[in-house]
Image (cartoon, rainbow, N blue to C red; front, side):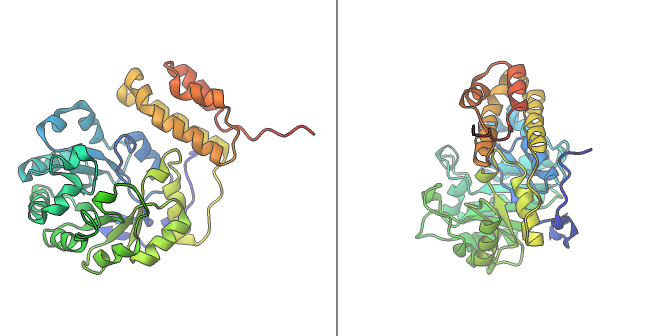
Length: 344
């Protein structure tokens, strides 16, 4: 029996298409550095996410040759397999796209939305929204280098005085991109304030290809409002999915059906957390895998507490501090304990 097999109305809906890919459901998992590892993507897809994007893979020589970058290209058990690449040199982006396709990618996403200074300082990520000619050249080179669909993720613009996402989306469509995702903030906002979902509508109205809305989507109510305000085809969920890889599928189900699917039992949540941890150990080895897993382990514990499970503070601390994988596995077995009954 597959504990992760969740009945979802999105399976019964007509698929929507991104290039030659047919996607079921209107909720996608965003690419997130340090978070959307292979284990996270695999779980999100099994729980019903229409698509789950890899962590960003740098296209320059340093990023291209790093073992961790090569691991990000892996898509074992994740279909369709979507890889995000970043860079500012057309030739390097073309090579990165070719490598991703050879590694089994079904779709390539170009990062033009990351606000981090370590990315924008190298003229990549959202810095490309200040140089649309270069951005267009990167898209053209990527599309020409591969036979698989190419999408672009962007922000509203660099700042409120330059909301040029519609123009960038038009150029992307003109060069052959099959989908764009717009985060409802500018680069200068980073993650402060609130995402402006209504502002995404200008991009939706500027192109014929599907537009996905991103930013601050935490539940199905957010997703419905986001779609209504933006007119987007689908929503992309980011940080809210940390510690609950089933969230994207839950949202996809509610968008399709109009009602929530049954709450996941403790046994399924526990199995997901255990599989996530054990997969990371297999991918990265015990030492690095354990350290990589800590942000996920903390998130599973914190989300369990928010969902009403009894989380012992000492056990939570040991979960993220332990250097012994066996201790962590034992702690995970008790993670989703029911609330203690108060004494009469």
